[in-house]
Length: 457
Length: 158
Image 1 (cartoon, each protein chain N blue to C red):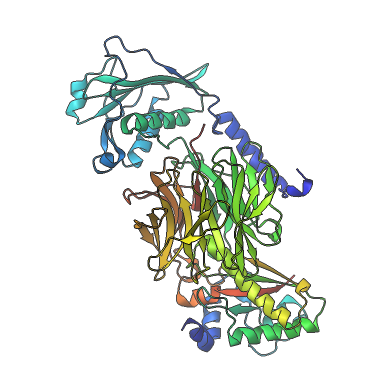
Image 2: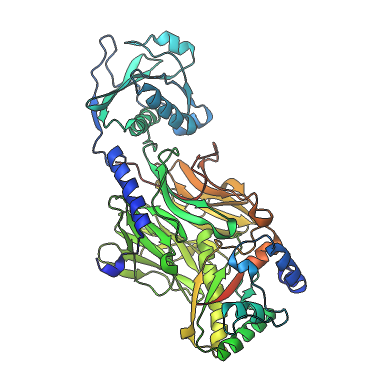
């Protein structure tokens, strides 16, 4: 690394980073599985052997008929917290209906839970002791009376929320047959101050809005954080020293480096699926070109040179194609080209203009922003442009980002401002890719530019 | 339509909308007012008061209107008079586009103004450009009038 690659970080910013990174390390919330151990629990004496009850309900079925699941307050001093996080995750995703009932002692009396209409039941304890936190968790099929899962987790005393998210993911996967997404984070931009000149800070939180904290000071305009799919790194755009450019921040060390050496403004970064390169756009004359920059060698490769605005590039999950936004045809539309550049083909043909495309990790959908008649919509379409569906609308809805299993989108919603900026708000919402279950994440204050992390390790 | 409105009512609308603003841009003008005195010649204040520091664009466009060209002609003449001055052109957009596209669109606008000044004899080395996309609106209400003001390129002395 050359010294010039380091962007200046003020002492105050450095202190801020050190504080948060230190805290993350202490909490073991840095996304590394290190610190959490999982061991199978032996079957209870009278319980039928486990293994039964593998997913019989699909996500599509659960959307229309959420799975009733009893989540009692677990035993032990941390039981309340663990149960409340599990209930929050499962209830908020819209595919489960948490039911509060008494914690069973030993083998549950399934008749009681059946009469509540429950399909599944959680039991266990969460206890802090000298060795840290131990959570014993069992998942039961109420209809068959069989244990579906039994696991003991041990971790640091501060890891209760993390273990609860891991358990919620296990429940999701065992009952729906797909990986969950609750043990994940969202990077975003925290906003404050007057509408005309907002202070923007890089920030990060758990996907449920907990543990929110800043990753940068507010000295420079900072936009569009993007997670590496494979490492603890964020790419983002900063106006540091009044030169708007793309940087990469290591969440492990707090080190921030300029990425790429360009004359123009570099912006709209996204990591390739292998995490080795970042694709971005760079202004030139009246337009912008798409480049990739290799993180290790810093070698750059120009993929487009249309003279128009080519921006918002995003790789397909298999790395073979790139969807991007271009006004080469006269208005901003979505195009797909090969990952090496070339063969660009327009895929958006609805009324209005399009932007902010992002490819689902499942590969089958591209989410986008559409603007028509002065109003914004958020939608999805197949990569060949067919099957367009609008999920939600608003004055401004932009910057969609997929959760790790591709079932939910987070996005930024902003309201119109009156004179002097009164009434302006900016928040992060989530919505199921079928358009169901829209809600907002209770982030701290005004927020925008969400970027969902991969599953925490 | 939007530009016509600005042309006819521009100053009145602009001043009215700016009355409750606090940012620096809000105290600037188009330079159409009578010659101001008491400002340092060749300064930012001189540019704002006596030349006009900004030009406006139509929705999703970067064409320079005749009014914009007249403002830039005055800027070119002013820059010829003060050859030591260097300027930054900052392109801005209304908030009716996506965040990333608007960064490029703002730069396209600043670039259009820069190219015009260069064609009028201003050395390219005296001009830098930047774009704030939709993140530094001059007028903070959401209305056709505000959006027309926010689609601009603002010249400032560096």
